[in-house]
Length: 104
Image 1 (cartoon, rainbow, N blue to C red):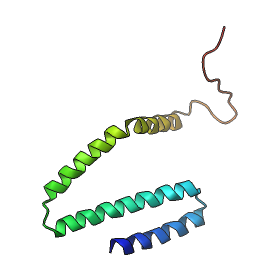
Image 2: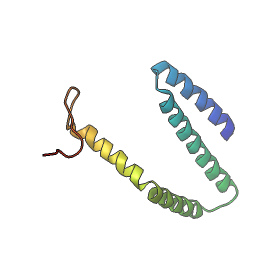
Image 3: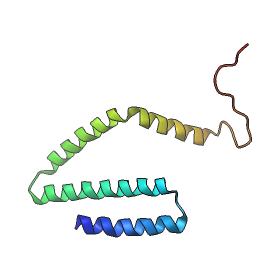
Image 4: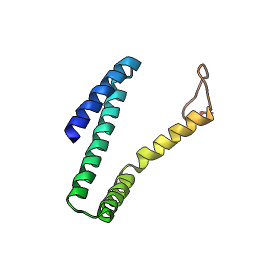
């Protein structure tokens, strides 16, 4: 079922990406995210059918989330900084921006 769902959603997503003219790397990132979500749902369903208690699934996902959070700390920081720049609008198109220190 997971493979069928992945193929169905992937086909829909690729048609949607072509229709709205998304960049190829954006489409690839969306496909990867979709596949990861479907994989996690399939693992949760198999664990539930196998009789694994929800507490074990929650504990394993919390440990995995903490490991992923520590591993991607810089990336998340850069993402949040990018969101701040987008929200603050410190400069606009046509402005000149000087990088580095000014030499006297």
